[in-house]
Length: 134
Image (cartoon, rainbow, N blue to C red):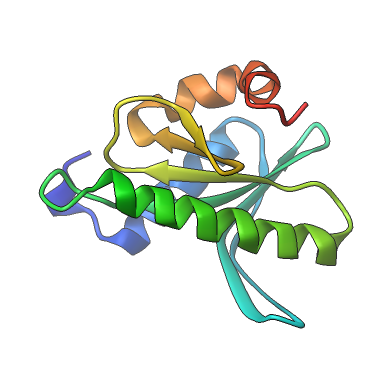
């Protein structure tokens, strides 16, 4: 997938489609409100009792910065805690980034490069154990 040929909206849809191809039930662009205000999650995906809250980031090589993804991971983890409380279930925060090197965890949020999303989903349970979610 070339970065010049896909918008951020299309990237969100591609991520949703990949999750569905792995058997996840998905909700797209989920908006919620709580005492802190409005929140939005790009894709909420559920399978086998696991709920992933996905924030798709179409960073490119030209302006991608590790500090930016770390800030976004912190914000997404907080947003997911709020959503988890509203829904009454555990929600795993995940950022799918267009550009990156490895699957990592930062401040309670898993960061998965798009090129590794299939491996992440095939081996989801192992990743969740490794990162302390199971």
